[in-house]
Amino acid sequence: VGLLVVAIPLDIARPPEEFIEDTTGPQIVDFAQLDFNRELVILQFSETLNVATLNLSEITFQSLFFQPMATISLTGGQVPPLNTSLLEISLSQADLDTLKLSSMVCTYRGNCYISFTADLVEDMNNNAAIAVEDTFPGFLVVEYLRDAIPPELLNFDLDLAIGTLTLEFSEPIDLESVQYERIVLQGVQNISNETDIDTFPLTEPQNVTFLNTRTLLLHLSARNVEDLKSSRFFVDSNT
Image (tube, rainbow, N blue to C red; front, side, top):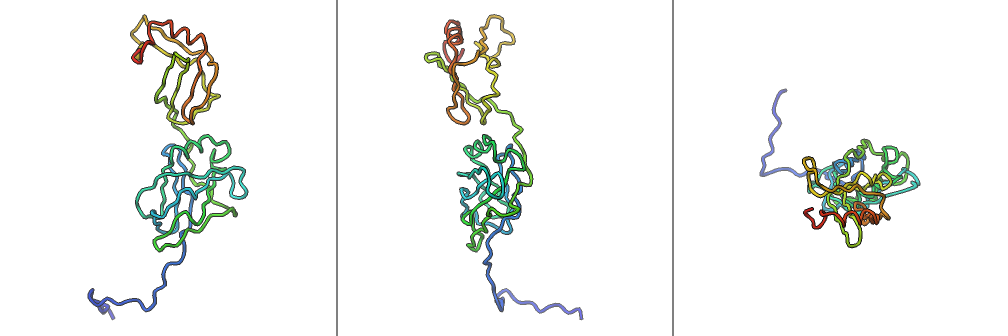
């Protein structure tokens, strides 16, 4: 009683009587989070993943776990180069914009399910993932963090030769929400201490189109173009 176990020296280590290798593929445990602010998707799996085998295009977001009305499949993204059971996916700009523009998928927690095929990833023993199929109850996102960051104007171009104003934003915008009269072109950067500076609130443009999901092209009204051309400002990019 109380005797220590006999040590096994490092140079004569014993093999197991029987070794049963891992033949079970990694299985999703939780669709843990969709965060529009950090542009991040987090999936919790049952075991460590070999991220070198990851194929993000196998992931699909859907409005319902069974026969969804709408789906969105990833086209890319980035993950940390770390083999782990917690998969953190940084969404690509294209995929993020597609999700934000969707009216049926992941607009709130209740229509944000995930599925993927067995080709998504393998574990460290080359076992393919267990696919998530359209079966009850599906995998509904646990934590849904809606977009709380307002869009920001990144760049703009003014072309008086053809009468256009191009606005590039930090994310997709709702065209119906744009109040054109709140867009003001001015002759200097800071007009707080200026008294003799031309400012031009826009009137309703003749036409508005999307150049891409984040860039608006406004065809200015004839009145706006004429006012801008007649100003002593707006003669180069510095004014």
